[in-house]
Every structure is written in structure tokens, then in C-alpha cells.
Image (cartoon, one colour):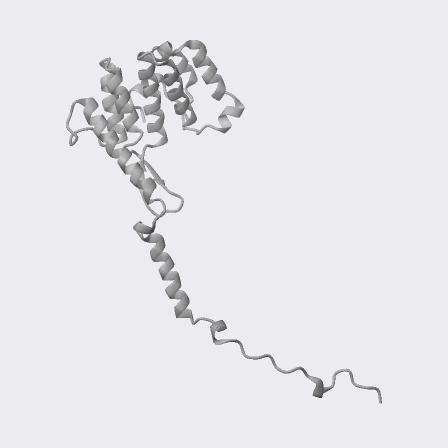
Length: 219
């Protein structure tokens, strides 16, 4: 008879049992590991954004002190929020105190505002200036720089306002407070944003506001 290719007597030996270390961990051990990871993520000391948030807190403290000094008040009675700093800055601006008004508008960008932000790797949220408040602070800072004769700084601040959504270009061009920055430079800056390509890289806002409403904190 023809030889059998797979004889029962020629079966390979069974595989050895897996070592004890390769055995599956029980479900409760997986639960403990997940809990440890959760505690590490929620632990403030293990938060990788803690240094950045500490720097933000220091900036806010310094901004509050600068705002209090600019208004001539003690640190306990100085502006504590973005809106309060902008409002106080507008008051100083209307009295012609452009240097101290500029300090307040700069501080407004660091103080707690109407916006909420969160670091990508942290579950915590903190208060920050909203888009409208950022626009207002930067626009008014641009006016201060222009009145102080700092044309380059005025254009830089105005560009920041436009990057954050300010789009009332006609009002900005007609604003006498920005006139010292130079009409030609203002037109050049506006043309950078008032085109289809520039609008792709600019935040949008709902509606438009006149230049006077910006100076009166119309947000």
C-alpha cells in the first residue's frame, strides 16, 4: 500500500505551556492601571502645562499692578479684569493721558476677561480676554501709540486687532486718532486684510462697529 503522508504516530510534540509572566492580567489590575493614569493626568503637580500657567498668572499679577499704578490707585483697587482695564484706559485716553492709557490697554490683554481658554493637555480652564476685548484693547493701544508719535507701534497694534477680527476698515482709516500713523501706511495695512486671501487668516466677528463704539468699549 502507498505510504501515508500524515501518520498519527508522526504528530509533532505539543507546545510547552506559556510562562507565568505571559498570563493575562486580571481585570481588576487593568482598572488599577487606568485609575493611576487618571490620577496622574488630573494631578496638578504632574500637569505639563503648569509652568505655562504659572507664567500666565505672573503676567496677570504684573498687569494688575501696572494698571493700578497707571490709575493712581492701590493694588487692591486697581482694574482686576480686562473690561475694567479697558474702561479705565479709555477714561485716561479721553483726558489726554496716553502713556498711562497705553499701560492699561496692554494690561487688559493679560487680565481675566470674558473669554475662556484651556491648554490642550490640561483639563483646567481659565479666564482670558475675549476676541472682542482683544480687538478693543489693541485698537485703543494703536490710538495711544499714534498720539505718542510711535507710528510703527501703532500699526503693529492695529494689525493685531485686525488679526483678531477687527474689520471696520473704513472707520479706522477715517479715525483722527490714528491719523498720525500715516494715511499711506494705514491704507497699506488695511489692504493686507481687506482682500479674499487676507480674510482667510483673520478671525471673524458678528456685525461691524464704528470707531467711536470701539473707544467706548462697545462689546
